[in-house]
Every structure is written in C-alpha cells, then in structure tokens.
Amino acid sequence: ANVAPTRTVLVVHDTTIGTALEASGTAAPVREATLGTRLMGSVTEVLVHEGQRVRQGDVLARIDARDVNAKGMQAAAGLAQAEAMYENARIQTSRLRALYADSAAPKAQLDDAEAGLARAEAGVHAARGAAAEVDAVRSYAEIRAPFDGVIVKRYVDPGAFVAPGAPMIGIE
Image 1 (spheres, one colour):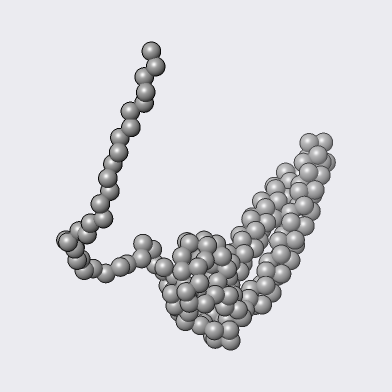
Image 2: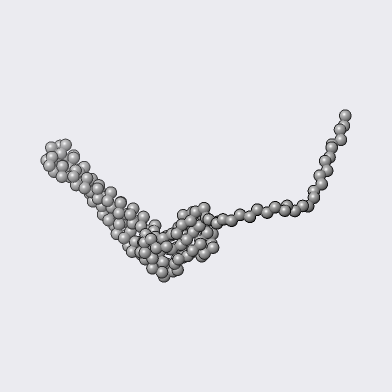
C-alpha cells in the first residue's frame, strides 16, 4: 500500500518583543601583563603598535645585547679552556693509573692526579654553568608575548633606555 507523505504547514509571524534587559558592568581581559626586562640597556626595536594582535612567543621588542654577547664569547672561551684542562688531566690520570698498577709511580702521585682530574671536572661544570647563565641573560634582550593577545600600551620607542622592571609593553 502506498501511503502519501504528510506535510505540515507552519506560519511565521513577525513580532517585536517588548521586554529589554539592561545590565551594567565592566569588561575585563581574561589575561593581562605589563612586560619589561631584567636587562639595562637601549631599546633597539619595537615591533608592535597599540591595537595589534600578537601570538604567544612573538618578539615584541629587542634590547641592545652587545655586552651580553661579549660575555657569551668569554664564557665559550672559558668552557673550551676548562674542557682542554679536563682532557689533559684525564690523560695524565690514566697514565699514572697504569704506572701505579705496574708499581712504577707512587700512590701520592696518583692521588694528586686524581685530585687534579676532579678539579678539572668541576671547572668544566662551572664553565658550563657560566655559559648557561649568559644564555639566560641573553634571552632577556627579546621581549616576547607570554600569551595570545592585543597590545594595549607601548611604553617605549627605539632609542629609549630601559632598566630592570621598567614597563615596556602592555598586553591583554
């Protein structure tokens, strides 16, 4: 048996709702931050303007970091020197261990070599720490967006001198 489909007709009327709801309040950002730096130096670039949208990690401004770069070269040289001293101490200690095993070197000489190797290893760790510290300080030369947002205030322009903690850019 064939059954014909049923159809429903709906009538739409244009009406106005007479009730209005008024509310007052203050709009506030979900997140906001005033960005600065831990460095003291001149601003070399400001890459954003007020009202500009930015993504997390975008570079917003740069500070002159030539002195930090010079310290980085010094730290790299110190690390290279410490590693060379460690390698020399390792070779000397290895030789003295072999000589001591053959009774060709006194225990005191081997003890001195072992202590020198430990000092050289500590020197390498200290030099690596100094290099890591310079890298951390170098990162302060670039002001980056901590989250996606909009630039709401630009406190500095290129050429401005900033000190640690001074506001540079506001983001919401």
